[in-house]
Image (cartoon, rainbow, N blue to C red; front, side):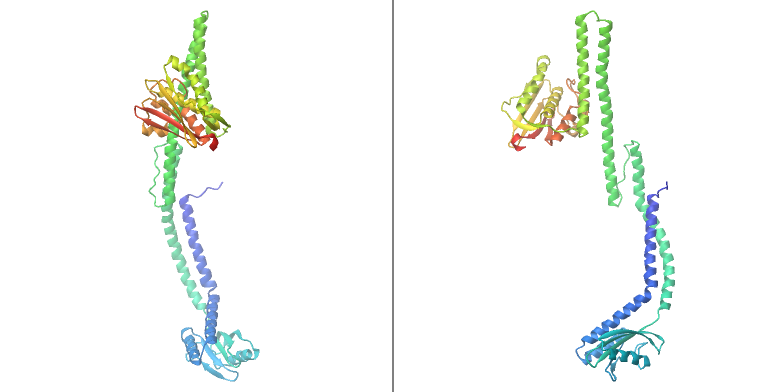
Length: 464
């Protein structure tokens, strides 16, 4: 494989190539096409003068046009009839056709041809050079002959050619120098960013991408990479936390399962009561493992966007009442108080199982974080176009700076102040994924030492 050029060399090569193309353009049009361009200009000049002569209103105006053309444009003009010359330029420029046998031939040819205009290229015998003649018929008996010398410009072309050789050498030298400094100036911040990006790829998250370039695109790239660095750093921290928490959540029940299984085998094999007690503990710990695995699978499927909504109409008040029945054991054993006073039927259209999971996880979160009064309050507020569900605890609240991160996996475990009675630490991440799938508005309000309220809003049935 061919080795690719670095940015500095690539910019330098393109700038040099651009300079060479400009020089080729100059050589082509200043040397090769100079004669043709000169002739084209002369033809244009005499046709312009001829047009002015044709439009002249009187003899005085005509004389002024003729004399001006002779003086300023080196063009000779002769007005004649079939028999003799009537008027010619007072200023006879170099190479004018006048009084030569050659002039008689092209005049006779044009007058006898009965054409309105034509162009002749002839050799002026007086100076042995090419001359260009534009003949026009003014009226039935009057003719105008506009002529100019096509002086050989080979010597001029040679001068230009020699001059362009020096110009080419100077321009190429300057191009090499200027291109070098320009390429260094442009490539330097990109090379610097590339080196920093390699460090980032090696998980050096303290790297800084310099965004002080005077090139806007490079500046934007540096800002984007700095943002990427911050997000990768957060992701890496969350990954470590996830691994640590999942490992802890797996290790604790596995240790207990092993311990009670060995106890049942070695010590309580004949004692049915103790054996049953040990078996119940093993079953509870297995259930905790099952919940953890299910939560991980649910979150993975949500974030992989392979979940689809199974929409149906259902009563959200009835659903909450059904969910609260699962928590009767907490009323009896832990003295929890669940307040839900809504009785009116409210229909919504959503995925019932997923909304059930949202409410279940939010209640679990409230149980784990509520205050010493063990109070959890659930409200369903019916608005005109949507239903708002609120679940409130009376805990210590959440710091304002932490609120953007509470939906991250296992983030809440760092701030936990009560035993995690229910759940795995993935509940709020699952809630976020489900509500995003439903395109719901959701959020959290928290006051220090007064509690936290999680809410979400979902459209009523009639608005779906």
